[in-house]
Length: 403
Image (tube, rainbow, N blue to C red):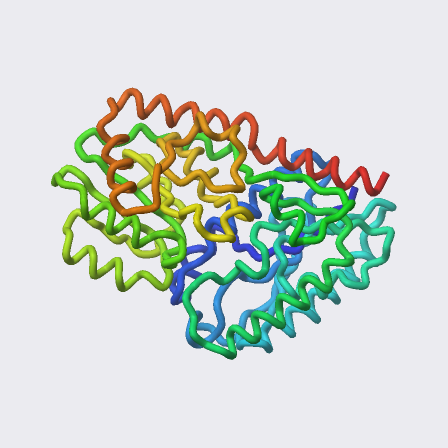
């Protein structure tokens, strides 16, 4: 089987250079998910996956320092034919150029790659990619990997009518183009209905991890009770509940570490000035995040279960948290299977005091007990959610159509 992957990713060696140019950080979790997916596919195929890629960076000049994103050919693995789509990095024009260039790249790949079984895997409901595959011949399977529904993609606070109008138009076009999709890879069972999957083949993957990163195993720090959050800093994800809850905890031996970028950055900086136990690291590399995870007492995700989007959500950071070997504290989101219950600590209510009580309850447990709990969670994702296992399931899904 020949596979083309349409993705929005970056090489780890480029991370620091891109971070210096970005004013809003980089989608690290999204990048990890895609590379894990590619690795999982390749461990089940006889040849590497070919990639057509666009850099997941914001537009110039507000979000990114470069007005031009150059295209280039590169190779992520021996024998792979990879292409980075270039464009002028301005709103609307950027998307239009990527759509046209991606469609050309798909046509070129279909005409030059040998073999009867050709498949295209599209990461996310990214409009330029869906446009690019809309006229792909029926004999070529197109699989869509959906990690977020279009209507919940941008959850940052915004009062811009123009932005909301453009998002509405964008979403309508996306759903119209889903007709060409042959099969779906989704994160929660609840995604089926809004995506109109119907009788088309699909699988639920929730997430996937790279076993090669298993060496990044944490044992925690014994001198501080440290709570770590890494990820997008938007208010809708419960970051204020975490900060307000932490402020209720008494004791200088408690610390809250926060890494990431988003609309709540200034609020977090202000909170750190009021409470010296709160440390804001800004947007840091994945290498640095893994170091912090290994030192933390508990890793937290304050995303609550009282929003509509949570039933369609399985935060990718959950898998990365569990892989670190540290205990994970979060809410039981509606889209999460009960299978995860023995591996996670859950917050019991949506008030700041509930967050505070849960943190204190966990941090009072013996270090050996926390280490063992984190180890079991780590073993769970390594055994049942590793990228090779998930990649095999995706290949089997495609083969049910290709025959």
